[in-house]
Length: 370
Image (cartoon, rainbow, N blue to C red; front, side, top):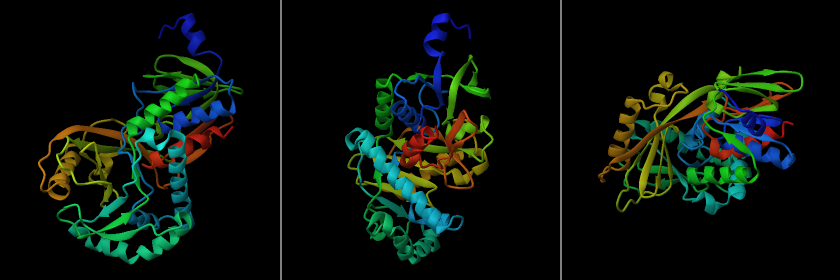
């Protein structure tokens, strides 16, 4: 790109901190850095016209894990690791709500429900069997019973008649959350450049040269908060994971309220604006969905429609209004990676689909690396 003197002087000179990614982590990192170093010059680089990844494309679940997910995680994590994970998610959600405000988030705590298809009777029975064990594990965190058995009062079909209810789960408006964060960043005079794809970086003794598809420049420190896209910049144990989502047109007299998990959390749905938002199905085609390319998988989208028709809305006529995909960052562990890559380069990545719950706190933790 043929940059002018004015462009270089105003946007790309004397940069103290560069952040790659304007999602939940990147924006919170920028705000924390500005709080710590009020006179610093901060630049955020975003590869999309809007925040890419999952920050504006998620389902808006303010959750910390369903019963079957926790049981599944206990197979590969210790009890203390699970407690630490859920504690971080719980505290992260509390911070987000306090920082943005429930009204600005349109936060509603309607509770979360896990439903089980009839082919997953064994899974339900195993969850029921371990209900007291998991509740005992989580009671110190919540000072109350977390999971309980409820009747199916929503009219769902082809499922086990009982649901597992969690009163602590809520839902937010993802768009409002990101608008609020972007407004906070704007007020702090933190600049964001959109449609800038970072291809590499080269570290010197006292600075980092950041190379994009359009230009290169120097920054004192570099923070990588690109989550599912970060494997192109870093040699870390993280893989992109594409999530498929659809939402119906408004449905008259919709009686479904809350957040819902199905098939160990591989499917999830909720009510929003008299619509049903439904996502998931990555388990149908793991290999194809391990990508950082946006797009729709017809096999998964067809399955989502079948779930809507046969399980969620068996008595309602509905039309699909929008379909989209988002890119998460996952790995063999559920813990996020927040660390120093070197003296001048840091990363906060691998949020594992829990960006709403932990994104704000991971952004703060990332900024606190210096």
